[in-house]
Image (tube, rainbow, N blue to C red; front, side, top):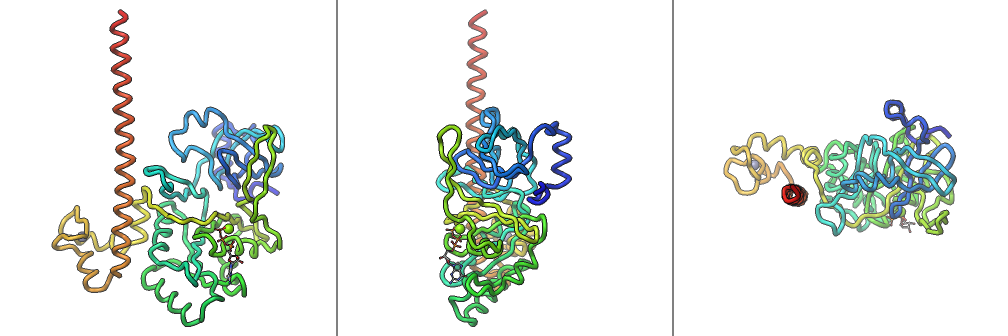
Length: 355
Ligand SMILES: Nc1nc2c(ncn2[C@@H]2O[C@H](COP(=O)(O)OP(=O)(O)OP(=O)(O)O)[C@@H](O)[C@H]2O)c(=O)[nH]1
Ligand SMILES: [Mg+2]
Ligand SMILES: [Zn+2]
């Protein structure tokens, strides 16, 4: 195994050289559980923690390692290594953290393509698909839509769903697959390239892990829990989330998601709803919200049926979420700043008193 086999490249090597990281091992984070990480290196899969300084200087979740990250680490033994640095990420898939407003959760990093998996039988939902597209587009990850479990519905219904997707979502490949019959696998295999990283996003139970297992060609992929004891007597339970296929493609499994909240993703919305954004150039008012204004080109297109009304409403909903997220972040920054000022003034006042 070479680092290149799990996605390492010249750019990362250059960064390593320029930042004096030559004396560290390099590895890729393949699983994370409560600030403990499993890192794949040429010496094997190692359990690691981050160096204290990284925790103390971290401003947000993005300053911690995530699945897919390249890290510089020191290996002491199989269960004990220290991560010193996260190498620059070329993409970060993130969402609004569930239950923590204004916080981000990283789903995976350094991903080239995301398979957006929806099951054809009950899970299928275009609005949600547009959400996934938005998080992909805001993180420079190319989406591929997989309609799974096609063995459970008839051909007519499948073609209806496909038409439905294609009228609302342009320029994104859509593949109908079944993990039972392996229909559609040929198409997936032609998409997967050596050295590129693919992740699986979708609700629980849609067949992500089954697909990963089948593609890996191994009969027993670890989808269930593996626990490893550590030298400190603690346990980390996690499954291996990153595997390498025979053709050299790298697949990352992800746990199913129930919510796909939009965080700060301006470009994501722009790409997903490109027609709305193109039309908005012709709105009468520059700050048009496309909700009630006269001379709104977007509303006009909705009325005429050029833009799907449900898609438009989905867009407005995500736009509001984004705005809410951004104002929450701005608000807490302002509070931090104000608090900083109070502390500074207080210190000044104390100094004056002394002399
Ligand atoms: N009929 C049918 N069943 C499938 C298909 N793919 C997966 N299943 C079944 O659906 C169930 C869930 O599949 P998983 O692969 O574990 O789903 P997952 O997306 O990984 O789910 P999470 O890990 O919870 O996010 C299993 O019982 C699979 O056997 C399919 O194409 N057709
Ligand atoms: Mg799974
Ligand atoms: Zn408008």
